[in-house]
Image (cartoon, rainbow, N blue to C red):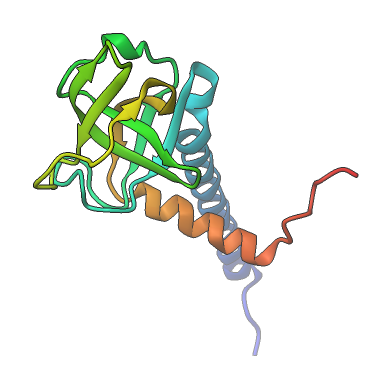
Length: 160
């Protein structure tokens, strides 16, 4: 049985176009994700995944929150949302309730919490002023990070 080579060449052309399109979409998505995660560092913006619901509904669990790293703490006002270091391994994103300029510390509270945070935040523990967030992006980014770190050994790329 003879098969037309014309059909095969058309099929190859369609497969090539489809493959090219998929690779283009993947490249654009990867670049967009990279910019969403690291693009702001050039202009002093960091990001962090929101792990708890203390700021819901404004900032949902799993969101990627963006914050400026250049903050003038004495100028922070009640209602603004900040990222701060609560302990060596814990960064928290909560709203400023009071700015005590005399003691150089902030009183904070999560929107969903009934009471204020138990300890004031010293100015030196403030990491940044939250400027926005993207729902679900934090989970996506950390999921990709976890998948990559489970495949790629942590010492790859380190210089000794």
